[in-house]
Image (cartoon, rainbow, N blue to C red; front, side, top):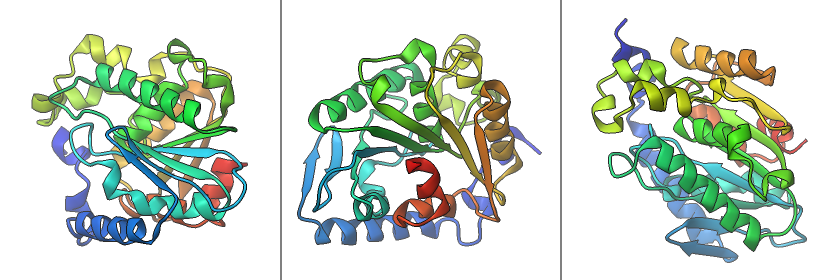
Length: 250
């Protein structure tokens, strides 16, 4: 298996390419139905109708080079139903930004959310977003808002960037050995923040390995969910009663 095949997703998921249009459509319909929403260049924030219990911050994936908050607005449904706000921060995509710059940008975006919203924070991210929220748990990323974070859930995370240097996508990402080590969560000590690595049981072996490496490095919780693949594994965020939401908000 080549490195490109190891980290390919849509080619190994039935009708994998259809998920992008499906996400866009669900997200657009969700936004149309919302009234308590803030949009800006920094991303989106959705507020519940009742008392605010806290805020879930979700960082999207796309190998740091694709995607946007507006593709995933519908994932706010679970948090809103449970009484939590839901924020989707934006970030500059590669090659216009290196991964180290994106890491710092996400930290700044979370700081903006923390200043705008009262109460506890819960961070979740998928794939490259899983990497970014795991970086927020690293000791070198401790911020004034870090004590407010009750849990970080890294969904299908990329915890070691070194294997990606061998893929063709690195022509866009430009990861070198120094950045791979500096930006890989497994090479950092974690803060005292509960972390859960969550991955679908039907994902590519490379992603199962990446989640396990984070678990092994940090001793954090690890959940392998059934036969979920890399695209449908995030659907639990839409349901306040799902195992994923119960684990995130516990």
